Length: 197
Image (cartoon, rainbow, N blue to C red; front, side):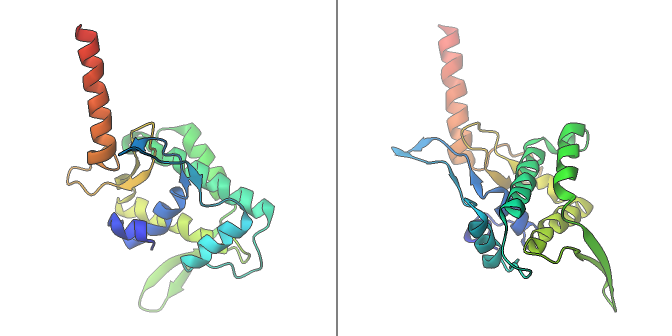
């Protein structure tokens, strides 16, 4: 669990998925006169290996190769496209689902039975990317318990940060109503005022 996921009270069971989706930061706005630069925490294979190790998803089977790195980026892109859809639309969007399924295919899982605990999913991979299977498991488990619908992408085109919607009705549209929400509402108000003139 990262500082960010702790700060925004993302459940532990979704923290890796949340953090992985947000390794790509496409925010491009100015706040209190400071421009927010776009960034990518996964600039190369070493960055990915470090990111996994920091979260206890460490690479056991050697180093992350360029091909493995591309596989991880495809997974992240597919997850972000999925989370960008409204929860009610996610299971109906065949294109997004197909892309997500293709991106998850390199991360096979196995069922393991445990005495007194039932069964759990674990990585079938045994290489450096085995740790990313934890993200596929979080996606699966969150779907079963219904918490995945609370993981959303900010509706602001200038943000697109993934956030966990803790509101009771689960209807939030922005990662932060005081920042993105306020900016979007102010812009809409100004446009209405211009149109009224």
